[in-house]
Length: 288
Length: 276
Image (cartoon, rainbow over all chains, first blue to last red; front, top):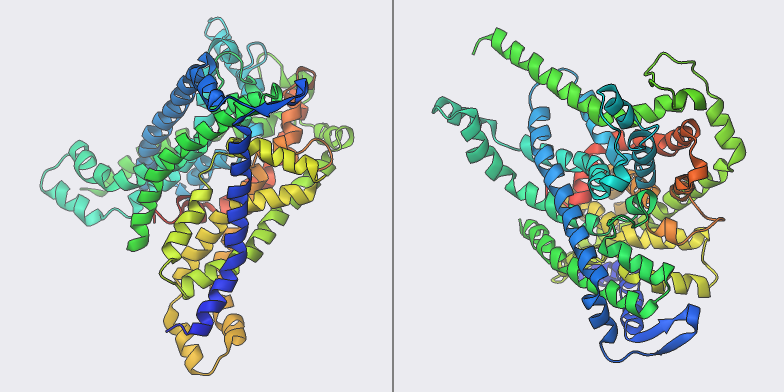
């Protein structure tokens, strides 16, 4: 049993981490809250109290907020749909006995390790460019008019690029979950005459539900703050301005600190709603 | 089920898996291949997959022209530095929570995790202003500090899950045999904890290396790492496919290799132990 002495020692050992995280979380957040109640535009020399919740009501009622929320929802929803559905099938495939499984796994996991600016730039120039991109050659080869992906289908292009980066993550986690599936249960079902479709829907999918939830929640947290991919490809143009990007532009590009900070706080609140569900899923696991 | 059928099925799944695997990997392979082409061949119509004049001149050009070495050095300092400082703070913290759990330990762990959920953009301006006013903007120190704090919850959680697996009985046996805290740490705990610490380190170097919000917004020249260097290619005059590919290949190669070694730890580290 832990003695009194070891308890206070433990507290001392934990203190630096707790203190630093506390500061890291509280100080900037309080500053953002403070700024969000100011009319602060350094480029014009304006620095005064805003009228109550004016910044919040202006940010929330602006058309750019509504469209940015739509963009964010489409982006996150599209990426989640592609990565989760693709991930389930890919994990199922990789769970089968195949030759060279280790190498295939390595090939599939690789995009997750590519830095976001590299993958955005490579896709943008070498694949989606309407003149020299690989897609343009393929389109021309089949006699079709090459598509200028990032201006004609910008949102889809970004969803595509980010999905490519996150599909490995979903696959890897779902594969881990698949491997913990009891094979005897599947065999028993097979002997009882269940075909592969019903085996998938009645045994595999329920077993995966927990892992799928975790994948969705974690990806949502990360995807809500997609930045580099938009920064490099469209810079927020052509209707690809997500909430994160809108706040970034308000704060650092147009230097409307008060309005941008209000937007930042709104982004924090929205992210925390998602986080609440994730924490619950993780917390349950701690009890076991 | 006969053996022939199993083998046929295995062949089909093998072909399917390899096809999909190669398709997913293709953009990376294409980048690596293009980095060995001349600029003319990089945009040749039709593009050639392997039958081109292989050259390594792009790598030399990238190194000479763009001060690549400095960006690489900055990436290394920031990724390795933030990870090492993070470990220094996280190891005692995770150790204490794993071996001397109190009533609040679970709450503390969950709270630490919750700090990771805060969208960076919500604190962008305060961090930029604090950095500018303190003169730390665009310095290694600032980037190491910010990325360390950003990844600290993940480091602590990963270490915690590893430390939790070390049987407490062994520690108690050591204590019974009269081991003090120091020898307990050096002879009992360290050998069992090292693999976990090593994989935590690996995963966090990867995360810090690829981080592209703070590194883009808190650096300009002096401390800018490879993420910022590559982003600078997005301007139109930087449209040199072969050189872009060479720069990209060098930026991702070390992390790809490290990543392949740490795939198993990835699941644990990024799901906070929720999927095993």
